[in-house]
Amino acid sequence: MSDMAELERRINAALERIDRGIDALARPAAAPAQPAGEDAREAEIARLQEALESERASNAQLTERVRALREKHEAAIAALERSVARLTAQLDAVGAELQNQKRINAGLIQTNRELSEAMKAGLAEPQLVNRAMMTELEALRAARRAEMAEMEEILSELKPLIEEVA
Image 1 (spheres, rainbow, N blue to C red):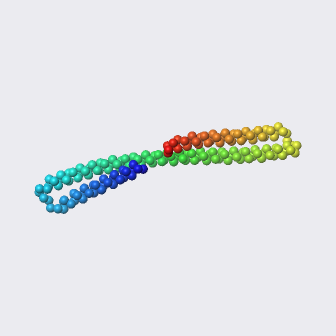
Image 2 (tube, rainbow, N blue to C red):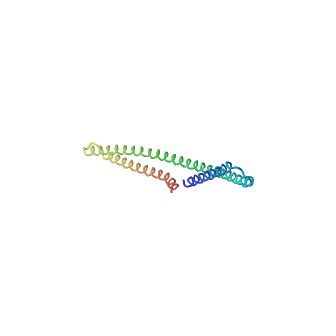
Image 3 (cartoon, rainbow, N blue to C red):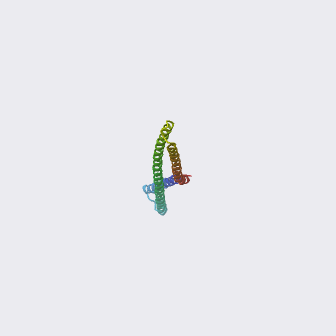
């Protein structure tokens, strides 16, 4: 951004010099021409025209540099916006999966409670209770692994973005 501000400042300074040169050209034309000063006047006009052309070329270069910088910044911003959108979508998917896992785990917990109650009443076999408990434990482990994998994926995506900013 400081490059753009510097370029803008230089363009404005060049335009002011051009205006002063044009004003200087207009003033001698209004005064009566003096034969002895005619060569000096033409030399001044030539010098001012050369300065004007130089400033125009400089202005064109600066304008092109500003345009190139803008395009570069816009492209970088667009890439970052795409990355943020992609990461947001991934995060939403992880959130949905997490909610699904929570729902499944709540169902397993409820089933285990019912089996435990049935066991206390003498209506269920102990092997069924053990199997249900093992299933619940495995579901919890799977949920944990899924969460860890998702977190690793998110961190691997965020790490390059953080390094770019830093």
